[in-house]
Image 1 (tube, one colour):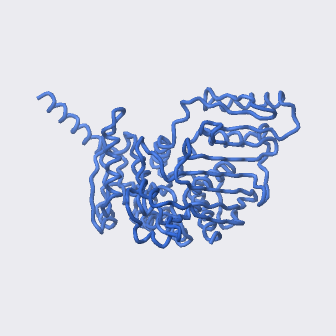
Image 2 (spheres, one colour):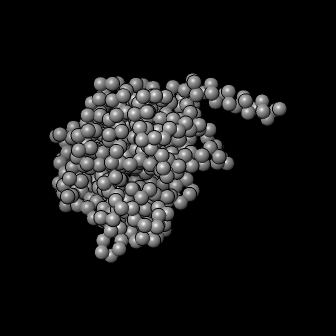
Image 3 (cartoon, helix red, strand yellow):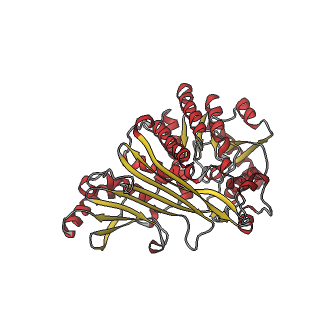
Length: 449
């Protein structure tokens, strides 16, 4: 009797919370694990009842399994209640029923821009995983979507988790300190002032489990080439770090100078390991070469000018890491110092920020400048210190409590989005800079071909 009463009280409390919550999520055609990571933690402003609209199939089942994993985990379990509709008319059904006010979109990128436009045109807020656009035609539709969102007074926002990574935050902060960094150099196409490189792996773990990827992930017509996918994060960081809170105009501020792409080849055994499929789907067969391997155009690089600053973006996908995991390299070159993030074996595969002096100033004097710079940094990030590790070179030491990991960054992005919803507006620079970002990636895609 006591257990029954307790269960009834829990159900009543959850129902009351669902009614009181101002944010009610709808998940549209989830096909990427990022759709689930938005729900890894709960927030009192968000209803525990989430409506899912999907055509059905393995992508949906994996999504629901991940949510159930969050609900049943031993530590800090969630209490999501998924209400699922499946059918070929799932998009129309969502717009007709409208049980929520925020649509989460993370899945097949070939359909994503159309989903985004349909949702904002129906007067719904959208929280979308990257990339919002993978072709120039998608970019044209995305422009219409942002114009429509402004007209309908709804928010359209993408999930930029890398802004929450602590070494990137500190790189940005130090770049705004002239005594340390000086001024950002302009660089040249062959020697850019800003470089961002990212190495990823098809075979990895998410939430402690081996990641099963859908077969369409390897079809660049559906997923997008690497040059328009992960590069979204890197271009976002260039804009965010070099021109913080500046409104960028893609029509005048950006010129893509050169771009190229190349393939990663997967054996049938490797493909089976990450998809659990014994054969190639028919839509992938055109990408299977004479060597019997699947050639995925997952890699790309491009150089561009942003307001006169030359930047180079590179992304590489390998099958699985020899050790560690995804890695990141980031360089910002100032007139007084270079700020460099490395994440290799020397750094135990943890992002580590270095300050490399570029002026004829004694190390002891420059160290005093760095000590002064730590004052405002420690106000926001107590415990951050610096250690000299060579002539003219310092390592930024970051307490482990700030290294919360990629998956936890989704909660931080969601928190930002919820604050924007409460204010009923994005910061003035966010929407134009999202357009600038996707213009850059889709223009590079076009140029690489």
